[in-house]
Amino acid sequence: MLASREFWQQRSLHPIARILLIVVVSVLVCIAVGFIVAAGRFARADLLALMLYAAIAAFAWHPLTAAFMVMVICSLGAVLTGSAGDLLELAIALGLVAATCAPWGIVIHVLVLGMLTADIALNGSSLTDGGVFGVAGIAMIAFLAGLTFRLVSAREAIFASERARVMSDLETLAREEQERIADELHDGIAHDLTLVLFHARALPRQPDEAARQVSLSTIEDSAEKALQSVQSLLSLIRETRPEVTEARPTRYAGDLVEVVASLGDLLKDARIPTRVSTPRIPLGATPAADRALTEAAIEAVTNILKHAPNSRSASVEVLRQPGTVELVVTNVSTPLAKGAIGGTGRGLVRARQRLIHQGGQLQSEATADGWILCAAVPASGAEWSEGTRRRAARTGT
Image (cartoon, helix red, strand yellow):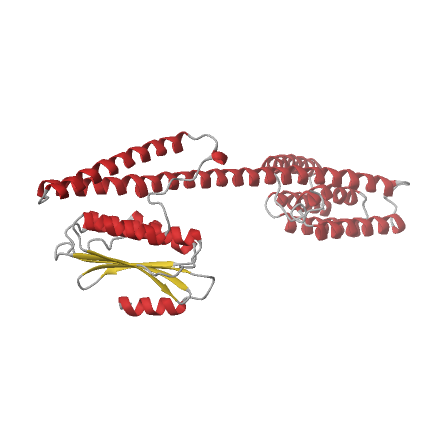
């Protein structure tokens, strides 16, 4: 700690030391005033003494300014009176300087004390034999006392900083846990309940037995998955050992192409004519980027079912552009539902955050006849400005 730069930085007195200093200075001022009143006159030495006490009191607020004031006042006193008392006061003040000032301030104070002591020892008569050693001893004791106060203050600052860091880490962990729970609620349970609600509403209007069986099967499967998600969420909340927490199970298995095919079937089961288009070549995206696009596709299809269940048509496309993998989800809505799913709810916000984390981006907006979502991630580490330009030209942004 003694070798660290932070330890030797200029610092304020500890609050308790500041109070003690003010009390001591107040007592000294009262004593000095008492002597002045008893003597019946106000001498030059009394003025210097009161100025010195004021300078010492200034250590409570402006240590560096106070240190120079003490050096100047003690130097004037020693030069004008040749008294060794000013040397003792300067030596004692070294404790305050060592406790608060930067190293260069301490060095200047020691040099001034040394030069004044040498001058009085050689040219004055007030310093007794061996007085130099007495002044040096008092200065050393004061320096060690000041260093001790600095050490206590530095340790307290370190403890406070460490406590703040721990509190910040705990708050971060709490926020991350809240995000995990919220993601589980939204990505899992909300998706399944959307399917249950959609097919429950559509069930009375199904034209034939086969369509009703599809709705009933979807309701049953989605309700079962929602129940599993609730159980998973309860396990997540009750988990007391974060280091062994397992990864959250995904809603759809497989890569982006497989999930897009499943989502297309989901929209078709909801009697929304849907076109699915995927490339036949490898996408080239990292697994994390592929999963981010997959979650964006799930969110887009869920929004169609939730906000535009009467869409006349929809399309889910995966495009392999130079340097990018793009996802484009569109729907053609009825006049009342047009643009309804272009909101800024949690799902789209989280999908955008996940894509940005993988170096990608997401755009969603209303079109002339419905809504469009465009998402992209880098592929194979290549630049993807060309893909971004084509996407902007297609969406008109």
